[in-house]
Length: 258
Ligand code: COA
Image 1 (cartoon, rainbow, N blue to C red):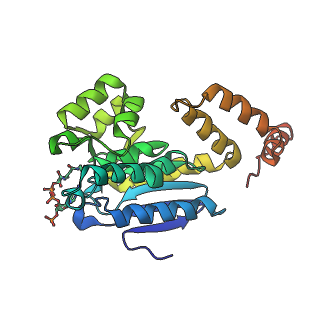
Image 2 (cartoon, rainbow, N blue to C red; image 1 turned 60 degrees about the vertical axis):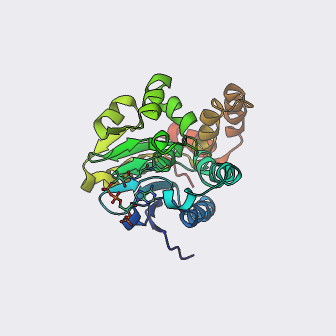
């Protein structure tokens, strides 16, 4: 399918999903969010794809936030709907994606942009990246999961400060905070992130999928992550990938996963 606001490149089982509105610093308008949602459904079902890397086009921005021009005149009801639909169609979909999603933050990740990066399973950043949740400076609060995921990643105090000051932190501080796992030069960001993805691809996709659910369930009030772990640990014993992984180890060879 052709997209207008995003592009997808698949190479060696790694899909790079690039948000492509550089003139608007890749701000997330409704059409872009819809395309991301559709693309995620396609990538989830594409057996050739094992890892998804999210990034932004250009050298300046990952995503500079939700498109402010689009929601400036919204009513209370439309505001609530914008947030709820975004959670369901994009941000929760990324968090619970059955394959690893890595955000490669190549510049400004603000508001909805940082929220998009935080919905991913982990993040890398370029050394020019700047991250923040500026919503309170606009008279609103983060609405795509930022109030929940930022404290999960950096702790409550640092999250409160970032949300209250509406300030930006640089890549090196984001690394210290644990908000990103690695900082690379801008020109190396995608290649280095692909190298990381390559290490993931060596392992069982089924097991990784189960691990994503178990880790995520820690943060769901209606779920018990320990019980999810027990369930998925047990289920693994019934999979071909478990048979392949354990027999490869015993045979002293590399496993061949799907
Ligand atoms: N929504 C809509 N448009 C946006 C946008 C957003 N979140 N962020 C940037 N843009 C647009 C600008 O309006 C501008 O468009 P124009 O050329 O048609 O006027 C274009 O992108 C370039 O941005 P500009 O502000 O000129 O770049 P800059 O280098 O001076 O500043 C930022 C960069 C990121 C600091 C600044 O764009 C900014 O503060 N953006 C908003 C960030 C924000 O509050 N996001 C949270 C939204 S909830």
